Image 1 (cartoon, one colour):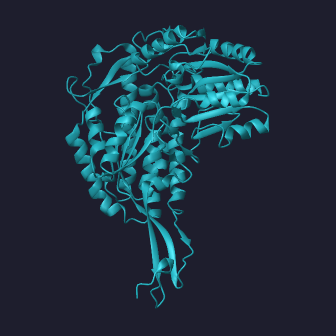
Image 2 (cartoon, rainbow, N blue to C red; image 1 turned 90 degrees about the vertical axis):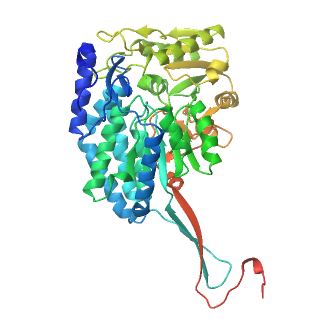
Amino acid sequence: MTATTSAQSLSPLSTELRAAALAALERLGATVPEAAEDAGIAVHSPLSGERIATVRRDGAEETRAAVGQAAEAFTTWRSVPAPARGHVIKRFGELLAEHKADLAELVTIEAGKITSEALGEVQEMIDICDYALGLSRSISGRTVPSERPGHRLMETWHPLGVVGVISAFNFPVAVWSWNTAVALVCGDTVVWKPSEKTLLSAIGSAALLDRALVEAGYPSEISRLVLGELEAGEALVADERVALLSATGSERMGAAVAPVVAGRMGRYLLELGGNNAAVITPSADLDLTTRGVVFSAAGTAGQRCTTLRRLIVHSSIVDDVVARLVRAYEGLPIGDPRTDGTLVGPLVDAGSAERMARSLAEARADGGEVLVGGGEVTVDGAPEATYVAPAIVRMPAQTAVVRRETFAPVLYVMTYDELDEAIALHNDVPQGLSSSIFTLDAREAERFLSEAGSDCGIANVNIGTSGAEIGGAFGGEKSTGGGRESGSDAWKQYMRRATNTINYSTELPLAQGVNFG
Protein backbone atom coordinates (compact mmCIF):
# COMPACT_ATOMS: atom_id res chain seq x y z
CA MET A 1 0.00 0.00 0.00
CA THR A 2 1.52 3.29 -1.04
CA ALA A 3 0.81 6.52 0.76
CA THR A 4 -1.56 9.10 -0.62
CA THR A 5 -2.46 10.61 2.76
CA SER A 6 0.48 12.88 3.49
CA ALA A 7 2.46 11.58 6.44
CA GLN A 8 3.73 15.10 7.07
CA SER A 9 0.17 16.28 7.78
CA LEU A 10 -0.51 13.65 10.42
CA SER A 11 -0.09 13.89 14.17
CA PRO A 12 2.45 11.52 15.76
CA LEU A 13 -0.38 9.21 16.91
CA SER A 14 -2.00 9.10 13.47
CA THR A 15 1.39 8.46 11.87
CA GLU A 16 1.84 5.52 14.24
CA LEU A 17 -1.66 4.20 13.53
CA ARG A 18 -1.23 4.51 9.79
CA ALA A 19 2.06 2.64 9.87
CA ALA A 20 0.55 -0.11 12.02
CA ALA A 21 -2.43 -0.48 9.67
CA LEU A 22 -0.17 -0.66 6.60
CA ALA A 23 2.00 -3.29 8.22
CA ALA A 24 -0.99 -5.40 9.25
CA LEU A 25 -2.47 -5.23 5.74
CA GLU A 26 0.85 -6.26 4.22
CA ARG A 27 1.00 -9.30 6.50
CA LEU A 28 -2.56 -10.15 5.45
CA GLY A 29 -1.52 -10.02 1.80
CA ALA A 30 -4.01 -7.26 1.09
CA THR A 31 -3.76 -4.82 -1.79
CA VAL A 32 -5.41 -1.52 -0.94
CA PRO A 33 -6.89 0.55 -3.80
CA GLU A 34 -5.92 4.01 -2.61
CA ALA A 35 -7.15 7.26 -4.10
CA ALA A 36 -6.40 10.94 -3.99
CA GLU A 37 -7.74 12.71 -0.92
CA ASP A 38 -10.30 14.65 -2.95
CA ALA A 39 -11.58 11.59 -4.83
CA GLY A 40 -11.71 8.67 -2.42
CA ILE A 41 -13.24 7.69 0.92
CA ALA A 42 -11.44 9.02 3.97
CA VAL A 43 -10.53 6.38 6.54
CA HIS A 44 -10.32 7.85 10.03
CA SER A 45 -9.14 6.18 13.21
CA PRO A 46 -11.26 6.98 16.28
CA LEU A 47 -8.09 6.63 18.34
CA SER A 48 -6.81 9.89 16.91
CA GLY A 49 -9.87 11.32 15.17
CA GLU A 50 -7.80 11.93 12.03
CA ARG A 51 -7.64 10.55 8.50
CA ILE A 52 -5.07 7.77 8.17
CA ALA A 53 -5.79 6.69 4.57
CA THR A 54 -7.91 7.40 1.51
CA VAL A 55 -9.46 4.45 -0.30
CA ARG A 56 -11.01 4.14 -3.75
CA ARG A 57 -14.71 5.01 -3.89
CA ASP A 58 -16.91 2.47 -5.69
CA GLY A 59 -20.22 3.77 -6.98
CA ALA A 60 -23.35 2.24 -8.45
CA GLU A 61 -21.64 1.10 -11.63
CA GLU A 62 -18.88 -0.74 -9.79
CA THR A 63 -21.43 -2.30 -7.46
CA ARG A 64 -23.52 -3.61 -10.32
CA ALA A 65 -20.39 -5.01 -11.93
CA ALA A 66 -19.50 -6.85 -8.72
CA VAL A 67 -23.01 -8.30 -8.54
CA GLY A 68 -22.69 -9.43 -12.15
CA GLN A 69 -19.40 -11.21 -11.37
CA ALA A 70 -20.93 -12.91 -8.35
CA ALA A 71 -24.00 -13.93 -10.34
CA GLU A 72 -21.81 -15.50 -13.03
CA ALA A 73 -19.71 -17.31 -10.41
CA PHE A 74 -22.90 -18.66 -8.81
CA THR A 75 -23.69 -20.76 -11.89
CA THR A 76 -20.67 -22.97 -11.13
CA TRP A 77 -20.30 -22.55 -7.35
CA ARG A 78 -23.85 -23.86 -6.70
CA SER A 79 -22.87 -27.19 -8.28
CA VAL A 80 -19.77 -27.69 -6.12
CA PRO A 81 -20.62 -30.33 -3.46
CA ALA A 82 -21.35 -28.73 -0.11
CA PRO A 83 -18.52 -30.61 1.69
CA ALA A 84 -16.07 -29.23 -0.88
CA ARG A 85 -17.43 -25.74 -0.25
CA GLY A 86 -16.93 -26.43 3.43
CA HIS A 87 -13.23 -27.11 2.90
CA VAL A 88 -12.83 -23.59 1.49
CA ILE A 89 -14.37 -22.19 4.66
CA LYS A 90 -12.15 -24.48 6.74
CA ARG A 91 -9.11 -22.97 5.04
CA PHE A 92 -10.51 -19.47 5.58
CA GLY A 93 -10.81 -20.25 9.29
CA GLU A 94 -7.21 -21.48 9.37
CA LEU A 95 -6.01 -18.25 7.77
CA LEU A 96 -8.04 -16.21 10.25
CA ALA A 97 -6.43 -18.09 13.13
CA GLU A 98 -2.97 -17.52 11.63
CA HIS A 99 -3.62 -13.78 11.23
CA LYS A 100 -5.88 -13.24 14.22
CA ALA A 101 -3.67 -10.56 15.78
CA ASP A 102 -3.24 -8.70 12.47
CA LEU A 103 -6.94 -8.46 11.76
CA ALA A 104 -7.74 -7.58 15.37
CA GLU A 105 -5.23 -4.74 15.17
CA LEU A 106 -7.09 -3.29 12.19
CA VAL A 107 -10.41 -3.61 14.06
CA THR A 108 -8.95 -1.69 17.01
CA ILE A 109 -7.47 1.02 14.79
CA GLU A 110 -10.68 1.55 12.79
CA ALA A 111 -13.49 0.72 15.24
CA GLY A 112 -11.79 1.67 18.52
CA LYS A 113 -12.37 -1.66 20.27
CA ILE A 114 -10.10 -2.65 23.13
CA THR A 115 -7.65 -5.39 22.14
CA SER A 116 -9.54 -8.14 23.98
CA GLU A 117 -12.81 -7.30 22.21
CA ALA A 118 -11.10 -7.00 18.82
CA LEU A 119 -9.48 -10.42 19.27
CA GLY A 120 -12.88 -11.74 20.35
CA GLU A 121 -14.45 -10.44 17.15
CA VAL A 122 -11.92 -12.31 15.02
CA GLN A 123 -12.49 -15.40 17.17
CA GLU A 124 -16.18 -15.15 16.23
CA MET A 125 -15.09 -15.37 12.60
CA ILE A 126 -13.05 -18.49 13.34
CA ASP A 127 -15.95 -20.01 15.27
CA ILE A 128 -18.45 -19.43 12.46
CA CYS A 129 -16.05 -21.11 10.04
CA ASP A 130 -16.01 -24.16 12.34
CA TYR A 131 -19.81 -24.07 12.46
CA ALA A 132 -20.14 -23.71 8.67
CA LEU A 133 -17.70 -26.56 8.06
CA GLY A 134 -19.94 -28.87 10.09
CA LEU A 135 -23.01 -27.47 8.35
CA SER A 136 -21.52 -28.41 4.98
CA ARG A 137 -22.07 -32.09 5.85
CA SER A 138 -25.39 -31.69 7.64
CA ILE A 139 -27.63 -29.54 5.41
CA SER A 140 -30.67 -31.73 5.17
CA GLY A 141 -34.27 -31.87 4.11
CA ARG A 142 -36.88 -34.26 5.40
CA THR A 143 -39.22 -36.98 4.23
CA VAL A 144 -42.88 -36.78 5.25
CA PRO A 145 -45.62 -39.41 4.86
CA SER A 146 -47.59 -39.29 1.64
CA GLU A 147 -51.31 -40.03 1.63
CA ARG A 148 -50.93 -41.78 -1.71
CA PRO A 149 -49.63 -45.35 -1.92
CA GLY A 150 -46.39 -45.79 -3.82
CA HIS A 151 -45.42 -42.14 -3.38
CA ARG A 152 -42.72 -40.35 -1.40
CA LEU A 153 -43.02 -36.73 -0.26
CA MET A 154 -39.86 -34.85 0.72
CA GLU A 155 -38.22 -31.44 1.03
CA THR A 156 -34.85 -30.47 -0.41
CA TRP A 157 -32.77 -27.30 -0.01
CA HIS A 158 -30.88 -25.55 -2.80
CA PRO A 159 -28.58 -22.53 -3.14
CA LEU A 160 -30.40 -19.24 -3.37
CA GLY A 161 -28.15 -17.02 -5.51
CA VAL A 162 -26.20 -13.83 -4.81
CA VAL A 163 -26.27 -12.67 -1.18
CA GLY A 164 -25.63 -8.96 -0.59
CA VAL A 165 -24.15 -8.02 2.79
CA ILE A 166 -24.15 -4.49 4.21
CA SER A 167 -22.30 -4.36 7.53
CA ALA A 168 -21.88 -1.73 10.25
CA PHE A 169 -18.75 -0.22 11.81
CA ASN A 170 -19.23 -1.66 15.30
CA PHE A 171 -18.66 -5.26 14.18
CA PRO A 172 -16.69 -4.53 11.03
CA VAL A 173 -15.73 -8.12 10.17
CA ALA A 174 -17.64 -10.63 12.34
CA VAL A 175 -21.13 -9.96 10.96
CA TRP A 176 -19.86 -10.27 7.39
CA SER A 177 -18.29 -13.61 8.29
CA TRP A 178 -21.54 -14.85 9.87
CA ASN A 179 -23.31 -14.26 6.57
CA THR A 180 -20.48 -15.23 4.25
CA ALA A 181 -19.34 -18.52 5.83
CA VAL A 182 -22.91 -19.83 5.93
CA ALA A 183 -23.89 -18.43 2.51
CA LEU A 184 -20.84 -19.92 0.76
CA VAL A 185 -21.38 -23.34 2.32
CA CYS A 186 -25.01 -23.15 1.21
CA GLY A 187 -23.80 -22.58 -2.37
CA ASP A 188 -24.46 -18.85 -2.64
CA THR A 189 -22.04 -16.16 -3.73
CA VAL A 190 -21.55 -12.92 -1.81
CA VAL A 191 -21.15 -9.19 -2.49
CA TRP A 192 -20.08 -7.20 0.58
CA LYS A 193 -20.40 -3.48 1.15
CA PRO A 194 -18.78 -2.75 4.51
CA SER A 195 -19.22 0.42 6.52
CA GLU A 196 -17.22 3.26 5.00
CA LYS A 197 -15.79 3.81 8.50
CA THR A 198 -13.99 0.43 8.54
CA LEU A 199 -12.73 -0.23 5.03
CA LEU A 200 -9.22 -1.40 5.93
CA SER A 201 -10.58 -4.18 8.15
CA ALA A 202 -12.81 -5.26 5.28
CA ILE A 203 -9.97 -5.24 2.78
CA GLY A 204 -7.85 -7.40 5.08
CA SER A 205 -10.67 -9.88 5.70
CA ALA A 206 -11.58 -10.17 2.03
CA ALA A 207 -7.94 -10.81 1.14
CA LEU A 208 -7.87 -13.90 3.36
CA LEU A 209 -11.07 -15.29 1.86
CA ASP A 210 -9.77 -14.62 -1.66
CA ARG A 211 -6.64 -16.57 -0.77
CA ALA A 212 -8.69 -19.52 0.53
CA LEU A 213 -10.77 -19.58 -2.67
CA VAL A 214 -7.80 -19.34 -5.03
CA GLU A 215 -5.80 -21.98 -3.14
CA ALA A 216 -8.74 -24.35 -3.60
CA GLY A 217 -8.93 -23.59 -7.32
CA TYR A 218 -12.06 -21.44 -7.29
CA PRO A 219 -12.46 -17.90 -8.66
CA SER A 220 -12.31 -15.00 -6.22
CA GLU A 221 -15.48 -13.64 -7.88
CA ILE A 222 -17.39 -16.00 -5.59
CA SER A 223 -16.98 -13.28 -2.95
CA ARG A 224 -16.80 -9.64 -4.03
CA LEU A 225 -15.95 -6.54 -1.98
CA VAL A 226 -17.44 -3.11 -2.79
CA LEU A 227 -15.76 -0.08 -1.19
CA GLY A 228 -18.54 2.45 -1.37
CA GLU A 229 -20.88 4.77 0.46
CA LEU A 230 -24.63 5.42 0.13
CA GLU A 231 -24.69 5.17 -3.67
CA ALA A 232 -23.07 1.72 -3.60
CA GLY A 233 -25.42 0.52 -0.87
CA GLU A 234 -28.49 1.70 -2.75
CA ALA A 235 -27.32 -0.08 -5.90
CA LEU A 236 -26.83 -3.33 -4.00
CA VAL A 237 -30.26 -3.06 -2.39
CA ALA A 238 -32.00 -2.37 -5.71
CA ASP A 239 -30.22 -5.00 -7.85
CA GLU A 240 -32.67 -7.74 -8.83
CA ARG A 241 -29.83 -10.25 -9.09
CA VAL A 242 -29.31 -10.04 -5.32
CA ALA A 243 -31.53 -12.84 -4.02
CA LEU A 244 -31.00 -12.05 -0.32
CA LEU A 245 -29.95 -8.70 1.15
CA SER A 246 -28.55 -8.93 4.68
CA ALA A 247 -28.21 -5.46 6.20
CA THR A 248 -27.01 -4.41 9.64
CA GLY A 249 -27.54 -0.84 10.77
CA SER A 250 -30.04 1.63 12.14
CA GLU A 251 -33.81 1.26 12.23
CA ARG A 252 -34.01 4.19 9.81
CA MET A 253 -31.76 2.35 7.35
CA GLY A 254 -33.85 -0.80 7.62
CA ALA A 255 -37.05 1.11 6.97
CA ALA A 256 -35.53 2.37 3.72
CA VAL A 257 -34.08 -0.99 2.65
CA ALA A 258 -37.07 -3.27 3.30
CA PRO A 259 -39.61 -1.77 0.86
CA VAL A 260 -37.05 -1.61 -1.96
CA VAL A 261 -36.09 -5.27 -1.63
CA ALA A 262 -39.69 -6.35 -1.11
CA GLY A 263 -40.74 -4.27 -4.12
CA ARG A 264 -38.53 -6.37 -6.37
CA MET A 265 -39.71 -9.58 -4.62
CA GLY A 266 -36.32 -10.24 -3.05
CA ARG A 267 -35.55 -11.48 0.42
CA TYR A 268 -34.07 -9.38 3.20
CA LEU A 269 -32.45 -10.17 6.53
CA LEU A 270 -32.33 -7.12 8.79
CA GLU A 271 -30.36 -6.61 12.02
CA LEU A 272 -31.32 -3.14 13.23
CA GLY A 273 -31.63 -1.19 16.49
CA GLY A 274 -31.53 -2.76 19.93
CA ASN A 275 -32.80 -0.78 22.93
CA ASN A 276 -31.96 -3.63 25.30
CA ALA A 277 -33.03 -3.95 28.92
CA ALA A 278 -32.30 -6.05 32.00
CA VAL A 279 -34.65 -6.69 34.89
CA ILE A 280 -32.99 -6.92 38.33
CA THR A 281 -35.10 -8.79 40.90
CA PRO A 282 -34.79 -8.83 44.71
CA SER A 283 -33.25 -12.32 44.66
CA ALA A 284 -30.47 -11.42 42.19
CA ASP A 285 -26.82 -12.12 42.98
CA LEU A 286 -25.73 -8.48 42.98
CA ASP A 287 -22.00 -9.16 42.60
CA LEU A 288 -22.68 -11.17 39.44
CA THR A 289 -25.30 -8.64 38.34
CA THR A 290 -22.89 -5.72 38.64
CA ARG A 291 -20.28 -7.43 36.48
CA GLY A 292 -22.86 -8.42 33.86
CA VAL A 293 -24.40 -4.96 33.70
CA VAL A 294 -21.12 -3.03 33.47
CA PHE A 295 -19.79 -5.09 30.57
CA SER A 296 -23.10 -5.02 28.71
CA ALA A 297 -23.60 -1.27 29.20
CA ALA A 298 -20.04 0.11 28.91
CA GLY A 299 -18.29 -2.47 26.73
CA THR A 300 -17.35 -1.28 23.23
CA ALA A 301 -18.11 2.21 24.56
CA GLY A 302 -21.81 1.41 24.30
CA GLN A 303 -21.57 0.84 20.54
CA ARG A 304 -23.03 -2.65 20.25
CA CYS A 305 -26.49 -3.45 18.98
CA THR A 306 -26.78 -5.64 22.09
CA THR A 307 -25.57 -2.91 24.49
CA LEU A 308 -27.59 -2.70 27.71
CA ARG A 309 -29.41 0.65 27.64
CA ARG A 310 -32.23 0.24 30.17
CA LEU A 311 -32.05 -1.19 33.70
CA ILE A 312 -35.36 -2.05 35.39
CA VAL A 313 -34.66 -2.62 39.09
CA HIS A 314 -36.96 -3.65 41.92
CA SER A 315 -37.61 -0.66 44.13
CA SER A 316 -36.42 -2.51 47.25
CA ILE A 317 -32.85 -2.89 45.95
CA VAL A 318 -32.44 -0.01 43.51
CA ASP A 319 -30.32 2.15 45.83
CA ASP A 320 -27.88 -0.71 46.47
CA VAL A 321 -27.69 -1.61 42.76
CA VAL A 322 -27.13 1.99 41.70
CA ALA A 323 -24.43 2.52 44.34
CA ARG A 324 -22.56 -0.57 43.13
CA LEU A 325 -22.78 0.52 39.50
CA VAL A 326 -21.68 4.08 40.19
CA ARG A 327 -18.59 2.79 42.04
CA ALA A 328 -17.78 0.48 39.14
CA TYR A 329 -18.26 3.24 36.55
CA GLU A 330 -16.05 5.64 38.51
CA GLY A 331 -13.21 3.12 38.24
CA LEU A 332 -13.56 2.31 34.53
CA PRO A 333 -10.21 2.84 32.74
CA ILE A 334 -10.90 5.02 29.68
CA GLY A 335 -8.28 5.60 27.00
CA ASP A 336 -6.24 4.16 24.15
CA PRO A 337 -7.83 0.74 23.51
CA ARG A 338 -4.43 -0.77 22.73
CA THR A 339 -3.21 -0.12 26.28
CA ASP A 340 -3.37 -3.00 28.76
CA GLY A 341 -6.09 -2.43 31.32
CA THR A 342 -8.19 -0.07 29.22
CA LEU A 343 -11.84 -1.10 29.27
CA VAL A 344 -13.50 1.80 27.41
CA GLY A 345 -12.12 3.07 24.13
CA PRO A 346 -13.30 5.97 21.96
CA LEU A 347 -16.60 6.62 20.26
CA VAL A 348 -16.36 6.16 16.53
CA ASP A 349 -16.63 9.89 15.80
CA ALA A 350 -17.63 13.29 17.19
CA GLY A 351 -21.18 12.89 15.90
CA SER A 352 -21.72 10.02 18.34
CA ALA A 353 -20.68 12.24 21.25
CA GLU A 354 -23.04 14.97 20.09
CA ARG A 355 -25.97 12.53 19.97
CA MET A 356 -25.07 11.29 23.43
CA ALA A 357 -24.99 14.85 24.79
CA ARG A 358 -28.39 15.62 23.24
CA SER A 359 -29.90 12.49 24.77
CA LEU A 360 -28.54 13.35 28.21
CA ALA A 361 -29.94 16.87 27.92
CA GLU A 362 -33.34 15.48 26.95
CA ALA A 363 -33.24 12.99 29.83
CA ARG A 364 -32.51 15.83 32.28
CA ALA A 365 -35.42 17.81 30.84
CA ASP A 366 -37.63 14.77 31.48
CA GLY A 367 -36.63 14.74 35.15
CA GLY A 368 -33.68 12.37 34.87
CA GLU A 369 -30.60 12.67 37.07
CA VAL A 370 -27.14 11.86 35.67
CA LEU A 371 -25.50 9.94 38.50
CA VAL A 372 -22.08 9.42 36.93
CA GLY A 373 -20.26 10.07 33.64
CA GLY A 374 -21.62 11.70 30.53
CA GLY A 375 -18.78 14.09 29.80
CA GLU A 376 -15.96 13.95 27.29
CA VAL A 377 -12.57 12.67 28.41
CA THR A 378 -9.26 14.04 27.16
CA VAL A 379 -6.65 11.42 26.26
CA ASP A 380 -3.02 12.50 25.93
CA GLY A 381 -1.81 12.71 22.36
CA ALA A 382 -5.30 12.41 20.86
CA PRO A 383 -6.95 15.85 21.03
CA GLU A 384 -9.11 15.15 17.95
CA ALA A 385 -10.45 11.83 19.25
CA THR A 386 -13.79 11.45 21.04
CA TYR A 387 -13.63 9.69 24.38
CA VAL A 388 -16.55 9.85 26.82
CA ALA A 389 -17.26 8.65 30.34
CA PRO A 390 -20.10 6.08 30.30
CA ALA A 391 -23.18 7.54 31.97
CA ILE A 392 -25.83 6.24 34.35
CA VAL A 393 -29.09 8.20 34.46
CA ARG A 394 -31.85 7.69 37.04
CA MET A 395 -35.19 8.20 35.28
CA PRO A 396 -38.63 8.73 36.83
CA ALA A 397 -40.33 7.03 33.87
CA GLN A 398 -39.68 5.53 30.45
CA THR A 399 -39.85 8.73 28.42
CA ALA A 400 -39.36 9.21 24.69
CA VAL A 401 -35.57 9.50 24.96
CA VAL A 402 -35.43 6.19 26.84
CA ARG A 403 -37.55 4.46 24.20
CA ARG A 404 -35.18 5.69 21.49
CA GLU A 405 -31.81 3.99 21.02
CA THR A 406 -28.79 6.26 21.52
CA PHE A 407 -25.71 4.49 20.16
CA ALA A 408 -23.44 5.52 23.02
CA PRO A 409 -22.78 4.42 26.63
CA VAL A 410 -25.91 5.75 28.35
CA LEU A 411 -27.68 3.48 30.85
CA TYR A 412 -31.13 4.55 32.07
CA VAL A 413 -32.28 3.18 35.46
CA MET A 414 -35.97 2.78 36.32
CA THR A 415 -37.84 0.93 39.05
CA TYR A 416 -40.70 -1.55 39.40
CA ASP A 417 -42.65 -3.26 42.19
CA GLU A 418 -44.26 -6.28 40.49
CA LEU A 419 -42.66 -8.53 37.84
CA ASP A 420 -45.54 -8.06 35.40
CA GLU A 421 -44.94 -4.31 35.64
CA ALA A 422 -41.24 -4.84 34.87
CA ILE A 423 -42.00 -7.01 31.84
CA ALA A 424 -44.51 -4.49 30.51
CA LEU A 425 -41.93 -1.71 30.90
CA HIS A 426 -39.30 -3.90 29.28
CA ASN A 427 -41.46 -4.58 26.23
CA ASP A 428 -42.72 -1.01 25.82
CA VAL A 429 -40.12 0.03 23.23
CA PRO A 430 -40.12 -0.33 19.44
CA GLN A 431 -36.99 -2.50 19.41
CA GLY A 432 -36.73 -6.17 20.35
CA LEU A 433 -33.19 -7.53 20.13
CA SER A 434 -31.66 -8.66 23.43
CA SER A 435 -32.84 -8.87 27.03
CA SER A 436 -31.87 -10.24 30.43
CA ILE A 437 -33.22 -10.98 33.87
CA PHE A 438 -31.05 -11.34 36.95
CA THR A 439 -32.80 -13.59 39.47
CA LEU A 440 -32.29 -16.71 41.58
CA ASP A 441 -36.04 -17.40 41.52
CA ALA A 442 -36.85 -20.12 38.96
CA ARG A 443 -40.42 -18.92 38.60
CA GLU A 444 -39.29 -15.39 37.74
CA ALA A 445 -36.76 -16.71 35.22
CA GLU A 446 -39.32 -18.93 33.50
CA ARG A 447 -41.90 -16.14 33.48
CA PHE A 448 -39.41 -13.86 31.73
CA LEU A 449 -38.61 -16.54 29.11
CA SER A 450 -42.25 -17.48 28.50
CA GLU A 451 -44.56 -16.32 25.73
CA ALA A 452 -45.83 -13.62 28.11
CA GLY A 453 -42.33 -12.46 29.03
CA SER A 454 -39.57 -10.78 27.01
CA ASP A 455 -40.58 -10.04 23.43
CA CYS A 456 -36.98 -10.02 22.18
CA GLY A 457 -35.16 -12.42 19.89
CA ILE A 458 -32.60 -13.02 22.65
CA ALA A 459 -33.62 -13.52 26.29
CA ASN A 460 -31.00 -14.37 28.92
CA VAL A 461 -30.97 -15.31 32.59
CA ASN A 462 -28.15 -14.16 34.88
CA ILE A 463 -25.95 -12.87 32.09
CA GLY A 464 -25.98 -9.52 30.35
CA THR A 465 -27.46 -8.62 26.99
CA SER A 466 -24.12 -8.71 25.11
CA GLY A 467 -21.87 -11.59 24.16
CA ALA A 468 -23.92 -13.98 21.99
CA GLU A 469 -22.35 -17.28 20.91
CA ILE A 470 -22.38 -18.29 17.26
CA GLY A 471 -24.23 -21.56 17.92
CA GLY A 472 -27.51 -19.77 18.53
CA ALA A 473 -29.49 -17.80 15.98
CA PHE A 474 -28.81 -14.08 16.41
CA GLY A 475 -31.46 -11.45 15.74
CA GLY A 476 -34.49 -9.64 17.07
CA GLU A 477 -38.14 -8.76 16.64
CA LYS A 478 -40.21 -5.61 16.03
CA SER A 479 -38.16 -2.73 14.61
CA THR A 480 -34.98 -4.76 15.06
CA GLY A 481 -35.97 -6.37 11.78
CA GLY A 482 -36.82 -10.00 12.46
CA GLY A 483 -33.72 -11.46 10.79
CA ARG A 484 -31.62 -14.33 12.14
CA GLU A 485 -27.92 -14.88 11.50
CA SER A 486 -25.20 -17.25 12.68
CA GLY A 487 -26.23 -20.61 14.18
CA SER A 488 -29.27 -22.83 14.77
CA ASP A 489 -31.32 -23.04 11.55
CA ALA A 490 -30.42 -19.54 10.30
CA TRP A 491 -28.84 -21.27 7.28
CA LYS A 492 -32.31 -21.80 5.83
CA GLN A 493 -32.55 -18.09 4.97
CA TYR A 494 -29.67 -18.53 2.53
CA MET A 495 -31.34 -21.37 0.62
CA ARG A 496 -34.56 -22.09 -1.24
CA ARG A 497 -36.83 -24.96 -0.29
CA ALA A 498 -38.33 -27.37 -2.82
CA THR A 499 -41.12 -29.83 -2.06
CA ASN A 500 -40.74 -33.04 -4.07
CA THR A 501 -43.29 -35.78 -4.72
CA ILE A 502 -41.96 -39.00 -6.23
CA ASN A 503 -44.30 -41.64 -7.66
CA TYR A 504 -42.64 -45.04 -7.71
CA SER A 505 -45.88 -46.94 -8.35
CA THR A 506 -47.65 -47.87 -11.59
CA GLU A 507 -50.75 -45.91 -10.62
CA LEU A 508 -51.57 -42.19 -10.62
CA PRO A 509 -53.80 -41.52 -7.61
CA LEU A 510 -54.60 -37.87 -6.89
CA ALA A 511 -54.39 -36.22 -3.50
CA GLN A 512 -57.51 -35.50 -1.44
CA GLY A 513 -59.31 -38.33 -3.25
CA VAL A 514 -59.85 -36.28 -6.42
CA ASN A 515 -61.07 -38.37 -9.37
CA PHE A 516 -60.19 -36.98 -12.79
CA GLY A 517 -60.93 -40.13 -14.79
